[in-house]
Image (cartoon, rainbow, N blue to C red; front, side, top):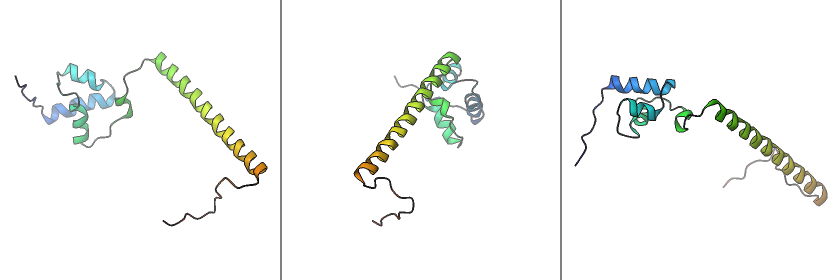
Length: 114
């Protein structure tokens, strides 16, 4: 049995979009509350009306404790990346000094034409 296509007015679409973009509802909450069957309809409406899609729409809602945990994890990852970059820089310094070769690209070097 084929399902009938749902018809929504432009006013209704804009109302739903406004609630989602303001953060009052997630896409999934809006779908359930307004009985919208299509999983990607709301995102398509946002694109149709040429509105920016917020980054948070792609992630599930997190509570404050989960957000704090995520922030701490990301801070550790950033610190690790900074330490790694510093270690690579030291390795290059040692290699340049001991092997007497130039590894780092000079800032005034011109790009080759291909």
